[in-house]
Amino acid sequence: MTRQRGAAEAEPVALPLSYWPADTSEPVLDWTVGRLLREAAAADPDGVALVEGVPDPDSRRRFTFAELNDIAEQVARRLLRYFEPGERLAVWAPNLPEWVFVELGAALAGLTLVTVNPAYRSSELEYVLGQSRASGLFLVRDYRGQSMAAALTEARPRLERLRHVFFFDEWREFMSGAPVTGELPEVSPDAAVQIQYTSGTTGVPKGALLHHRGMVNNARLVARRGRLGKVWVNAVPLFHSSGGGLAIFGPLFETATVVLVEQFDPGLILELIESERVTFLPGVPTMLIKIIEHPDFRRRDLSSLTSVCSGGTSVPPELVRRIEESLGVSFSISYGQTEASPGVTQNFPDDSIEDKALTAGPPLPQTEVKIVDRETGEVLPLGEPGELCTRGYLVMHGYFDMPEATAAAIDEEGWLHTGDVGSMDERGYCRIHGRLKEMIIRGGENIYPKEIEDVLLERSDIAEVAVVGVPDPQWGEQVAAVLRSVGPERPDEQELFEYVRERLAPYKTPRVWRFVDEFPLNASGKILKTELVETLTR
Image (tube, rainbow, N blue to C red; front, side, top):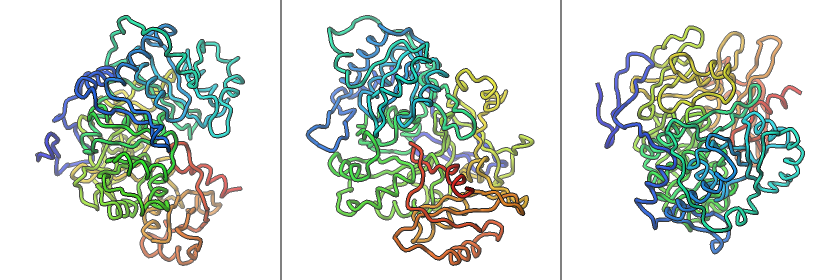
């Protein structure tokens, strides 16, 4: 049985088990990134596609959809002077308009873009370029005090396949001369478009080989479900599947403007929302917390903002309520991972505050999801936590040149095993409990950190919290809570202990408490729990 949801989506009801069949009410388009760009340029040639979100308003470069298409085609033709279709081209830089030009140009040229975290050091750069067998690299010379040029010089003797290097400060030279003519290659929607490296929290980083069809359709379906408006601000790193995928390709489908921010700065983002009349703000919870805690938050005119979306990690229910109430916007939560292009589930804008606060919504169209027992693979009853698996157009081809890792992630029936613990209700709405590898096992009891984190974040004196497991000789693991308080005065540990004890089972109550002024974060704004565990166990 189904009932219509919105213009096109249908919402299944009364599921018998934790399995959601793909909703086919929206088609999967056989489009490439190049097709998407050309369609946008034809639909709104004079509309503003991209704004460089620098602090000085007079220095903000602006590009129409027609200009963006022309630049990308020129970049593609120039790249084909150096590379053959199918080769891999890396980008190692913060969020720059030229990063986007290379991304789009490489897609038109049939090249596979390798996205590199600009925070990487020389050894990490060497690994990614070597493992991906990259033939070319675009980079900036310096970033946040690191000489990236020097780091490349150190690594390059061991990168035999790296033939060509281009610096972004020489962009004019790269683009100079008469326009390059000639036909661009035919690119299949099934062709590889990007290799994005996972964070490597277990073992070495793995390069998720993503395809045009997956990234293009995923961005489209996320944008449509979210109803995200006509001006997006993008401070999410472009090397990430959300920043360089959803937040670039989604606006192209909507012929919406992207205001691109080089690196996250909450004060600048607030100014841009006001001056550029931004309608949509994406960001992980740590970003959103810094924005609403910034001194300029109350004095800026944020009335244009209609939507805020978060994902990539657990979103505290109290943060959802706080943002909707303080900004008067619709808050939606999406769940996904790089290997899934990346979106898997997403709330509807008109969902209840309870659904937004406690779930990540139902699966997106054309996306199968099931919750299974990790050991047996059996689909679990509704409400029971297990591993979330997904199948459909969105699943990556695999990990580049890692057949064993690919086989471990994607089974013979095409299901991607996410490694995340989730549960599903009778409507298909999914709740994310955390990573399987973050699950704490205390005295044989399974404990999901998110449940404890959500309880602590209900308190008005707690700004951020991360719950981790630490070794314990008696229980195997013990629950530890690391917190950042709202003000300089820290809550009493015994009071916190009793607060959690009243709301959760005794074995879930943290026995170890630590306060920090700042959390260690990765480049995507996620708390590095592995570093917290190392600090707690020294």
